[in-house]
Image 1 (cartoon, rainbow, N blue to C red):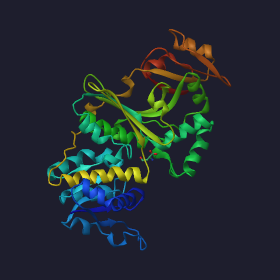
Image 2 (tube, protein in one colour; image 1 turned 135 degrees about the vertical axis):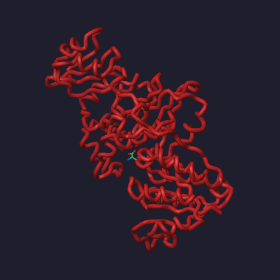
Image 3 (cartoon, rainbow, N blue to C red; image 1 turned 90 degrees about the horizontal axis):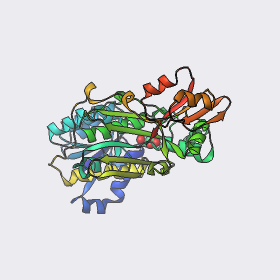
Image 4 (cartoon, rainbow, N blue to C red; image 1 turned 180 degrees about the vertical axis):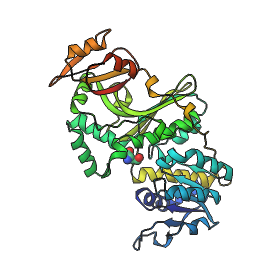
Length: 403
Ligand code: HSE
């Protein structure tokens, strides 16, 4: 029998308990043995909860119990979660988590510690919720050189953009609706400012390219500046606005990682990913493009990924499942300013002024009303080149085009 302790009985932690109890028989069959929930750590009291006998308030009870094999960390953040994860690994226990912030900021240290102690640190649920992506990327696609990973990594912002595009809601109205439906937090900045997507693309980049990429190394832009004028122009050009996280390997081995809104062509499968769904495309040198699609958040989808990691550890108890990468550094990344792409520009100018400034073959432009115009460049260029062409013109919105 394998004993599990859950740290944090919030949405994901309680989902893990429910899935472990609800699927006990089939989990035991697939994991080659019973997995028992022995402890739940939470500062709150849950006297009427069916798992009430499992609750403890002091992590030392779990840390000091040699019968606990696997600790599930669903506290979130980098405070107690980091302390307890370090202590659990030091105590020779494997740790499974859904905590993207902790993996994105301390993944190098924690995977190395797990390696030294001969245990596992697994985090399938940290990216894409219930969508399998960490294991496919690290195992099934391992024979490929990964060239690029890009995707819609945040359900809340995808919901907001979908409502702006489909219902013509303003950003503020769509955000309010997302909050009413329970998708967006009361303080929505981690989602709408792109930080949640940034943490996820940093984790994927570390696995794919072998070095830790810290969130502060990845320029991050959210969706709060997007207006209905941008949405309308994108539609008229056959494109949809999507918030993408991207990690692109350059020829010199450095990786460019960033999060920003992009214009995506209707023919790209990402354009059809709507509401709270997530999708991630991985481009490998042998396989070409592979896309992973599904529910990127939510109690049971995320819990299912956590429990699958628990089962993986249980099946391989005593055999460490290596998932680690090297330390990052300045030389691991290249600046986003080196990336060339086509651009969408909305500016305080007439369509003719904008076309003349952008020069070359005239891009299709059109007035968007009240002294504004928008267009897509035909030519790929860096942001610096674009800014030089637009010198003297006030830009209102600038986004990359995903080609
Ligand atoms: N708030 C996140 C999202 C869920 O909307 O996708 C988990 O990262």
